[in-house]
Amino acid sequence: MYIYQESDRYFAQAADDVKDIAEEELRELGASDISHGYRGLHFTADPRTLYAINYHSRLISRVLAPLVSFNCHSDRYLYKKSMEVHWEDFLDASKTFAVFASVSHSRINHSKFAALRLKDAVVDYFRERTGERPSIDRREPDLWLNLHIENNQAAISLDTSGGSLHRRGYRKDSVKAPMIETLAAAIIRHSGWDGATPLYDPFCGSGTILCEALMHAAKMPSAFLRRQFGFQRLPDFQPEIWKQVESEALKGIIDLPEGLISGSDMSDEAVRTSVDNCLAIDRNKRIRLEQRDIFEIDELENRVIVCNPPYGIRMGGSKDLSSFYKEFGDFLKQRCSGSTAYIYFGDRKYIKSIGLRTSWKKALTNGGLDGRLAKIELY
Image 1: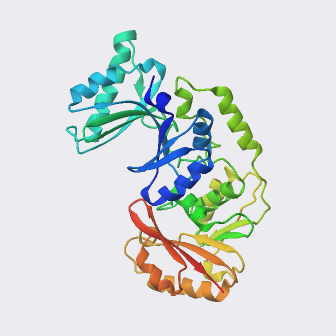
Image 2 (image 1 turned 180 degrees about the horizontal axis):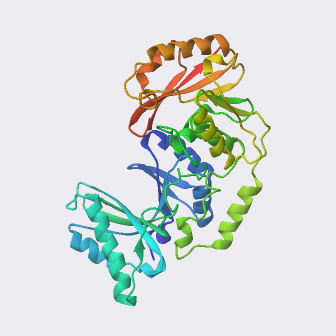
């Protein structure tokens, strides 16, 4: 038996700054015995819960099922122990696979080399037994494997998600420096928006915040566009339970009223991109979009404003945007009474420039940006 079969324990990869709300989400989806680990959360789940977490979670990037663990002081031993895994339980020579690895404080100190040794073992395992070998596919493999070595302790896991869950499938195109989907979902979660009040994004960019808002309010599974999952390659995969999870989730999708979610951008290219992306999940065209400079909008009263305003990368380098943020703050104060704004600052130095009191600020990274999400109540 593999480790996950004996323990029912899994590991959800999640950014450090969303671990708390990711824990809440996992608990809502049925996980138990949740504990924090390095860059993620350990939890206990039965098969139904495992499938549901992969299908519904908006905040985590992958769920790993641990297969084997062992002390690993050399690449030769890594290869030897990897050859002992019954790889035919997960794939055959006609399939493809990929390995992503991480190492720290260990004799093997290069992640790519560690990944290569595991790949060699899997390939040689099949070659010795069948004369054929599975191929490597780093884009869309049939099987994703994870290797983590820390303090010379190695763990090989199967990625039950089948690739990062942030790739929802709706983003057909993007503008410069797009927001990652899990961050947009975290912003919606922190806002507490439940669909009772109209939501507006005046800097919609490629439409990520709007798409995540729609999926949240419509109770749409975050991975409903995904064609396959890694858990389908587990030797104890139960297809009938997965079909039940999928069917129940799809029946629970709510049809939202038109105009509940709206957005705009001064860039015509951004609006076209948003329209294309939103159509992937908004086939009834419930999201309203238009090309418009924010300062040409008459008012945004009595609604929830969620946005990711321009910052250095999106505006082309190191341009000082203090005056822009001051003008944006004046817009919020003068034309948005009764609204609550949730503003993501990719560069937190501009929080002061907006000139409005924040109810709270939360650290949220976006790529290499140490950003902040600020809540501003407007009266």
